[in-house]
Image: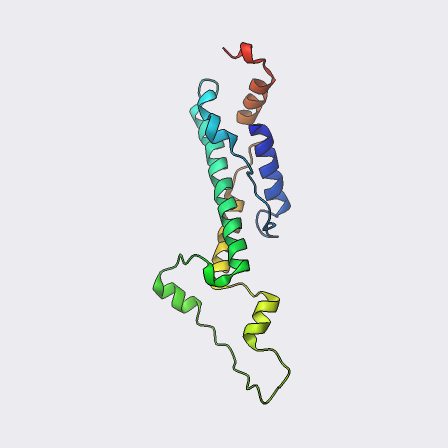
Length: 164
């Protein structure tokens, strides 16, 4: 199961162009997380550095899943997005002058807020989330063709009674 999770997560990251193309807001890199539940079974067979490498991959993939879910929430309702910036950065990032259009001059034109809702211009919070997704995705180290995963593959091919 762990091998499948690693392969699937890596495939999703590659398909997103390491975050530059964007992730599908309905997807998860790790629908299940078997590594965290079963890490104790592998401490005997893997070196500490290999365990750390796999754990780091899972941690980053889990964080990317969190960011995808956060971005989805931000797209659904920008007013409910989590504020993670300090007050000073928030005020400077959110100071974008919106031109005011008198309604009586152009009667059938949508307001800038209506246009933003239709086009879904990213909010400052969403831009930060997108930046984090790209940054974390580009820093994740692929594992599937490494010696650590090769050991996992060999372990998975053994019969249960050969493990003891």
